[in-house]
Length: 244
Image (cartoon, rainbow, N blue to C red; front, side, top):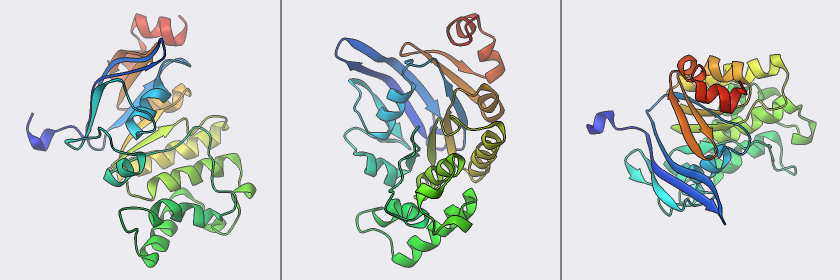
């Protein structure tokens, strides 16, 4: 593979154990720049462990993670963010003592070795709040936000450092159909700017509408990887994930 066609993200043989329990078993995944990848699987299938290994929150016992041709081995989570990988969390936990606007400035104020200039930080925070539709609520406390607005704030914070890869970890959980559509449209808009996205969701209509490619985990193993409709039609996926 030539450098120009090198995947943005390359995961090889990623394994993770917790005591005697194998959470990830030899995961191989490539992701190209700008790609929309859906990652699904039953609860306990290893999706969150996989994301935590990518982000550096935990270390794998085996295998490697390479981002834009460089190894992520030993890199702390904030350094992975500086290098272009950002994530959201299933349960948004904004800083309650800070305003919505101030929450978005946090990852920017501590970006890089010396941080960014104050003017640039404020400008980027305003851009992100405008993008997610929270500009009018910039001065509010996170306590005053609805559930869907908290999800949008979580996305704004993740997008602030201008990631090349965004991992959206169940950003639609607990939302109404119309709210799911809002987040889905927002993620499509982000992807249209060139940001690759890994979407982890249990809401199948959102996953199938979003994903160019679908990966399925079951019991820590990758059992399928391909075009979404073809993947969902395989007997192993139907049996393990859809319960057929």
